Every structure is written in structure tokens, then in C-alpha cells.
Image (cartoon, rainbow, N blue to C red; front, side, top):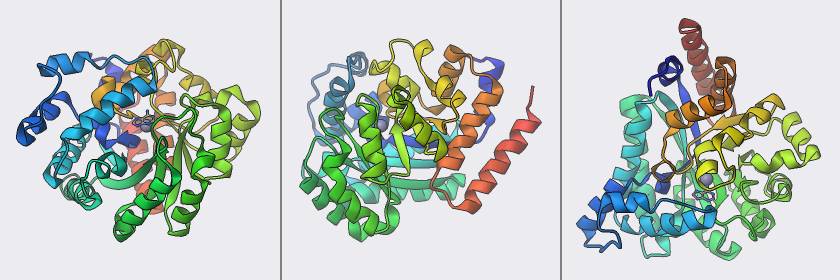
Length: 340
Ligand code: ADE
Ligand code: ZN
């Protein structure tokens, strides 16, 4: 698929703000790590595993996603996983990443927090040295578990505080509202962490209100259901709260039946600070470039809209003001040079 827009887009500098590192675990690596650790997989081949990636909703995906993560056992595994993602997006001109990790998925299997974060961190440091990429880490609490479990996880994270910019909230949304996690988010913000939360992916607009008012988040992850509530939409616009939208994820998890039905263009037209991200690229069939390309085609986004999305991601990022200015300048110079 080599349209002029795809080639133009590939070279433009990008930021990714919604990426679960466990969701970048490709079937090839599942098999490689399973062989390394002597784990028996319930799939005869890489192709058979890939074929199982056919989801009916968020929970059907999460069941497979948590099982896949079981092959990640030591520091080298977390390093390889992260290095492989960063190498891929470097080839798509991604300059800044903010990566989610789910420590509880691993600590609940007996893998120490330290093993997980040291492996990921080593790959981030390498990417900043080799590619000049800026990289941040966001620790996500699993919302199907208790607030007490999240508090215990936060405690484990404190010795590594300097490596983590924010806390987030992910996993099964419906039935697990942000209000359940107010206490741990209060403590986390008190420790200096920024806050984000998944809300309004499958859950109602009320969950977005709670994320803003109770968890005091700086961004909403997904948030696509905000348009059902005009008062909420008006607030998100006036405060320019970013939404980290993940179009291919929404398609694969059937939040929208077809990519053509996705509301991203409406979000932009309404003046929301929407961004494009890949969520769990190994499971949803595309990294950042593919998300942009397929969405631009399905929604007939013009170049000005694509540039707005790219700019929004830099503005919405937790990069320093200096880094943001440099990236925005690079984007504008590049876009000027390749306008058409
Ligand atoms: N964990 C990984 N991907 C997720 C998603 N799309 N929603 C909630 N939790 C997730
Ligand atoms: Zn997500």
C-alpha cells in the first residue's frame, strides 16, 4: 500500500501516547520466548496463534492478551519486547513515545516488579541513545483488581519513581469505574506522578467525568464515547483535554463496526484534541503508521487533518516544553517541505 499520502506520512515526525508494551508482543516472539522457557503453548504454530486474534469485545481480547504475556519471564524478555517495538516505530519516524506497562500482569505470576521495569528501561535508554527518541513510561493499574492491589503496586514502584512519569488505569472497563481507584490516584499524584485513565472506550461518558473530577487525569485514553454527552464534550474542548484514540483497536474490539463509522473526524471537527495511537499493535493488525493510513483512507482525512492529529500528539505529550517545541518545529518544517 504505497499511496502518495502514505509516503508523505511515513517521513513526518510522530508521537505515540497510547501503547501497551505487552500489546506489542508479536506471535513470533511468543513462540521464541515459549521455547526459551519451556512453556507449552496451546497453538501448533505462529499462524494458528495469529488466527486466534479474532475478538468480539474488550474482554475477549484481554483474555488472550494476559495469556500471551505469560511467556515474558526475565529482564531480557522485557528488554527484547521493548526494543523490538521501538525499532519498529523508529522506522515510522516516531520521535516520542509514552509507553504503558501493566506490572500486576507480571507480579501476580511471581515476576518481580524490578525485573519488568529494568528490562523495559534498558531498551528506552538504548533508543534514546541510538535514535534520539524521547521515551516515557506510564504504570497502569489493572481495574478488574482492587484498589488495595493497585496501592501495593504503587508502593513497589516508588524506588523507581524517576523512571515513571504517570500512572494510568486499564483492563476491563465496564463495572470498574474510575471512582474505585480515587484513593490510589490521590497518593500517586501526591508522589508527583501525572495521571491518565482509559475511559469511554466501552464504558459510558460518566466514567470520563469521574476520570477528570476524581482522578484528575491530564488525558483520557480512548474517550470516543464522549460525544454522547454534549456537556462533557464542551468541557473537553474548553480545557483541551487530549484523547488518545486508537482506531484499529476500536475496529478490532467492535467499538465501531467499520473504520468508516469511526468518529475521529467528528472529534476533530468538534475541536477536541484527538490523537491517533496503536494501543496493542501485535493484536490489532497495525502499528502507528498503519493506524494513520487506514484511518485517513476510511474517513477521507485531508492533509491538514492529518497534520492536526500529529501536532495534537506533541501538544498532548508529557515531553518537556523544550522538546515539544523542537518536535513541533520539525513537524512544520517537514510538512512545508513536502506539502502538496
Ligand atoms: N489493556 C490493553 N489494551 C487495552 C484496552 N484497549 N483497553 C483496556 N485495557 C487494555
Ligand atoms: Zn489501551
